Length: 343
Image 1 (cartoon, rainbow, N blue to C red):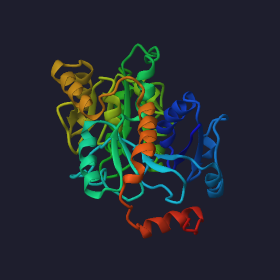
Image 2 (image 1 turned 90 degrees about the horizontal axis):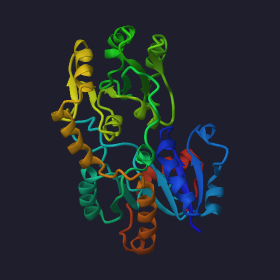
Image 3 (image 1 turned 90 degrees about the vertical axis):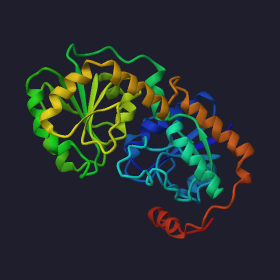
Image 4 (image 1 turned 30 degrees about the vertical axis):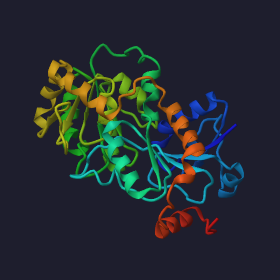
C-alpha cells in the first residue's frame, strides 16, 4: 500500500486533486492532504488532513502531488506537478507556464500542446522527467453524462481572469447586465478565486432571476450546465471547449479560429448568437484545438498520473541529475511553514 500527499495552496486545487484522491482510493492506497493556507474548511468529512510538517514526515508519502508552482522540498516523496490550468497564453510568450522553478521531479502534462516543450526542457536540465497523462481535473467531465438541463433557455457562463489588464469583468459588466435583463438567456457568473473582491461585489449587486453569481471550488458542474462561455484570456475557456461547446472571448491575447473573439462590448450579443448557432467551421476548429491541448476523453487521467508516478519511482528517480540549490525559494517555503531544518 502506497501513501500519497495532496498539497493545496489555492482553492482551485481541490477540483484538480479530488479526482486523484478518488483514483488513489480505488487502487486501495492511502491519501492525505496538506494545507498551505486557510483551506481546511473546504475539506470533506472523509478527507484526512495533516496539520504539521512533522505529521507529513511521519506519514512518509511516496509522492506529493501539486497543482501549483511550489512545494516544500523537505517533504518526503517525489514531487509531482499536475498543473493548475491550461496554458492560457496571457503574455506574449508562454515563458511563465514553462518556468522551471527547481522543485519538481515529474511533470504530468495535459496534452501535446505542452508535452513537447516540457520534454525539451527535461533534456536541457536533466533533473526532472515529463510524462503526458491528461489533466485530472477533467476526469469528472468525461466520467458520466452531463446533468439534465434545468433551463429551456440557453445558458451563458461568464468567467474572467483575475489579472486586471486582461479581465473582461469590468469592461463587460454593464453589457452583461443589460443583456441579462432581456431574459433571452440565463446567465451564470463565476470568477477566479483571486478576483478583486470589489469586482465580485459589483456583480453581486446586479444579480437577478436571470443572472446568478456562483462562487465554488468546483467549476465542472458550471461547465456542464452552460451552452456557451463568455470570457477573456482565461484557462477555463480551454476546459469549456473540451465539451465541444463554443466560446466567446473579449480581447483575447491569442485568439484562434476556435474562438469567437470580440473587441468591443457592443458586439457581445451578436457574438453569443453566432456561437450558439454552432457553425461548422467554428466547431471543426474547436475539435482540432481540443485534440491538441487534451486528447483524452476517457476520464482516467488521474489513473495515468498515478501510474506515471509509480513507474517513475520504480524506474527513473535514481537516474535524475541533482536539482539546483534554489536557496531563496527554499528559504521562502521554510519561512512560510515555520520550518528551518534542512532535512
